[in-house]
Image (tube, rainbow, N blue to C red; front, side, top):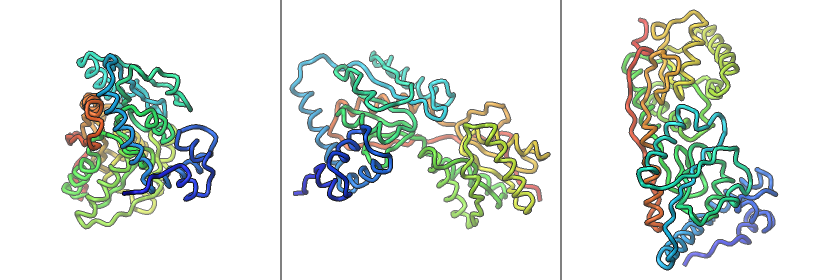
Length: 350
């Protein structure tokens, strides 16, 4: 029989006090971010969260069997205002539409939490009537901890916490970008660059890995310009300046690629505008691809159509399943995307 992981055993393994461990694992303030990360990492390695998850599932199952209270009819939807991650954003907003449609169809009610998250926010919400939480986009581990400690079901949409097990749902970012990059290679492109900050969210990182896999599949060496992996698309003026500087530097070395694979359509917009400032034409001089089919400037970007609305609808189904089957294995669902070939890609000039 495996040994139970206690707060004291975690404290002993990291050299911090039991008090610090307790605060960190409860998602409370009082410890530095670095200390919290070390404690959470140690707890994960020791199996604390798997143990806690089993405990929560058992308690939830017992409550459902024993309780005669009215059915829970409210779903709390969390979409924190981080990096333009709002309900008004065309990407996150479509996911929210799908969630709302499914909640209404199931004749449930919804609480929408869109403000910047803070410590103990959830303790101010009446948990009695909640079916559970649907968290959309990037959610800091501290907040996921606080939700997890409530003992209610929750689903992460377009996010996966590296430490805390949960149901999650994504686009198949890896395979979609692999296909998109392979298409460019099939057109004859051999000098490619990936553009966008891959550290922001898991989806962007998976797109980068899909791009890298396509290069490897075709025996093409990656000559990635590292600064292009730091461009942050939610700061348009700064990112345009940085992109222009980096493209000019590549051009001066006769290393400007014939194709750019961008983390999303917003970044593709920036790349196209920057190339135009340099007097280059898309796709004659450079091909450009995006992701999510959010072509705001109507450039006709070759992209991947994300099932944004379907992600939201399926998240509600996942939460209902978790509520009905608390002891079921966790699911990670990947939605297949559809590559859409438009005006911004062609074979490279001979």
